[in-house]
Image 1 (cartoon, one colour):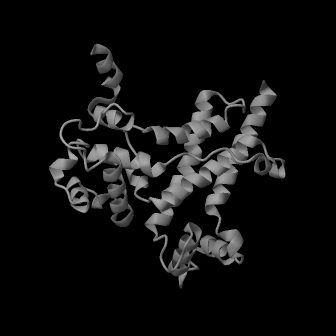
Image 2 (image 1 turned 120 degrees about the vertical axis):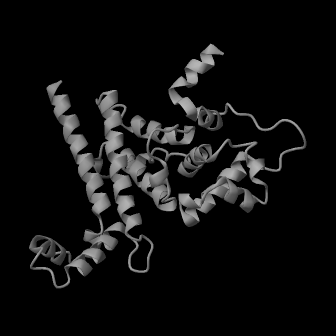
Image 3 (image 1 turned 45 degrees about the horizontal axis):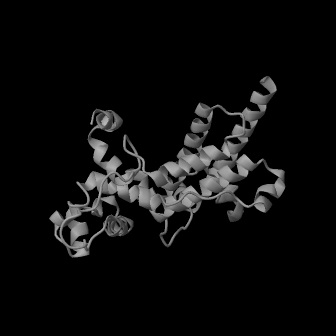
Length: 260
């Protein structure tokens, strides 16, 4: 027993989430075969969050959607915080696999760069499918096996680059932070509206409206917006930032090799 206490002590009152996410909590064993399951409960909660945001999720609402009582859910999930932990891990899904050799050889790029770019694109797709993840997956919490698998995949791409373990982790944080920021902007400014479908389009539309009749007050902004004549090249803030991050990592690796 002491060993179990030490194992979970770092998680404090989140020990219940550890049990649910990592297989330590068993299904109810008494009575008839359960009509509910953690999977059904989790998928129902995700559907609610996808439609109405994380605020739309409650134990009562999930129970109602499943046509069960709220108390029935507590046989499977202790409370909302544990449910959200399950939702995050399920919504993240499996991390992307390694690109095919043909893709990795395109342009003569180093494999780590091709893999980390593909990883970032896949992460952006997850956030676009489930915008509520941006608010849910923050702060001290327990990571599930699928979410941790994303970190594993990104670190594996950087394993042979010469970066230290700490530097690899920092690189993953920087890339994921950029993807989160771009997706957050898109979400907060109405991604998916009739006016715009991409973050950069949303930002450009907003700037044009704000600058109407005010260009003399913000000449630098007006000049930058005025030169955006090619939509295909301008709607790439996310991609531009990602490539500059990868450029910076490549330069850092090169300097480190030279120093060594």
